[in-house]
Image (cartoon, rainbow, N blue to C red; front, side):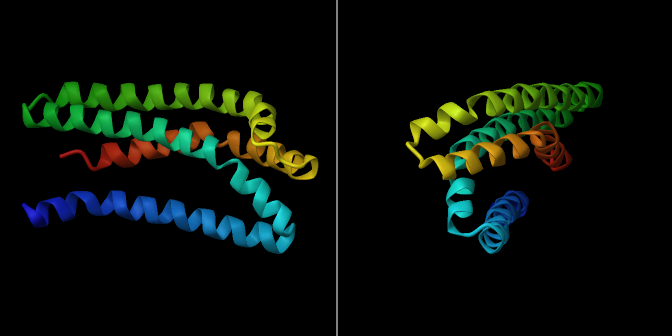
Length: 149
């Protein structure tokens, strides 16, 4: 059981480490290019990014469970339909989340009571990063689907 758990959890652990590394590298380059206020602006966007990741994982993990059960029941057609469905849903939800991120960028920065200069940078960052949400969501679901057994 221990080896199986390790084998099945390793891709998720690596994915989380890569996401964390992405945030560290992002902070490094923003810090070098913009300075401490830029880093503050990027990390003010974290609640929205965490929400996006949670929804992407919702579809990815839920879908992989259904795919695995279908494959275990030798219902390959059902598993393939599920893959297609969760990929489509992830992109659609990605578009919804992208739109919400763009629309909620200003209210979020107000709720965080950020200084005006940091709020302006954070809004710009949120809106730029939001454009990639559908692709990000799709990649999470695709990654999870590939691991279904």
